[in-house]
Length: 173
Picture 1 (spheres, rainbow, N blue to C red):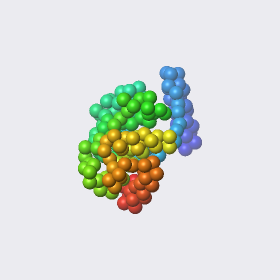
Picture 2 (picture 1 turned 90 degrees about the vertical axis):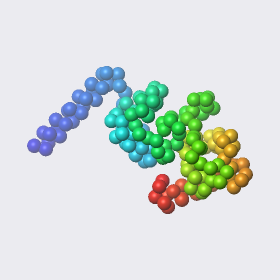
Picture 3 (picture 1 turned 180 degrees about the vertical axis):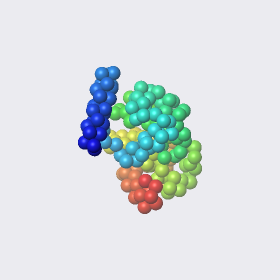
C-alpha cells in the first residue's frame, strides 16, 4: 500500500513540475545562509506568498508587494525597505540601493551592542570583500565613528568578527 501511495505521489509531483515547465517557469537551486532562510520563511508566513512569488517580487522590482503584505518592521532586516537585493556592482546602482536607517541610534554615544548591529547590517548590505571601502565610506558619510575616530578597513573587519562572536554568545545571531 505504501508503495502505491509513493508512486502516486511521485507521479503527481512529476506532473506538477512538467506543467510548471510548460507554463514557462524555470527551476533553480541555491545555497543561502540559515538566517536568510529563516527570514524568508517568516516573510512567507506573514504574507501567505510562495517562495516563487517572493523572489519574483524582489527581482522584478515589486518590493512594495512584499513589504505591504508583511509585517517586517523589526531591526533584524538590514534596510529601510526591509527587502534587500545584493547587486554585483553597488556603485552602479548606488542611488537605488537600500539605505541603512541610523535614526534609532545615538551616533555620538554608540554602545557596543548598537555598534555591533550597525556593523552586521552594513556587512549584510555590502557583503563582499571588494565592498570594504564602500562600507567605510558609508560609515564616514553617516558620521559613524569608531571610538571617536574614522573607521579603517582593518577596524571594520575586526569589529565584524567580534560582533558575530558577541551576538552568538548572546544567542541573537
